Length: 139
Image (tube, rainbow, N blue to C red):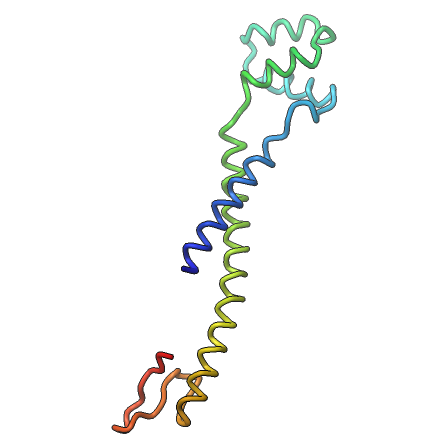
């Protein structure tokens, strides 16, 4: 059950991180938008929109930039970063939740075994049976 909970937490973190990593174009300033186009055009000099951008960048309004960014957005980089972040965060949160829940469960198990068997040894999780052998406590 704990593994299923950890998996669910990890997938939830992955999904929320993908959403948070894809910043909308509206949140960028004019200079950031121009830098994005300049970097793209430096890598792709023959793109027709790049030629138009180099001719007159001042004509580019928010609508024009949004279309350009939407058509050429590098989804692979965003998704890879989101996946790495989501898995790391999910593992951290899941591990913390599992260790916290596991420690409480272990303490209850030890308390039950100590209450039931006087010869219970918490270090080995065994008690001394009537036949003289050590037996694992399964309470």
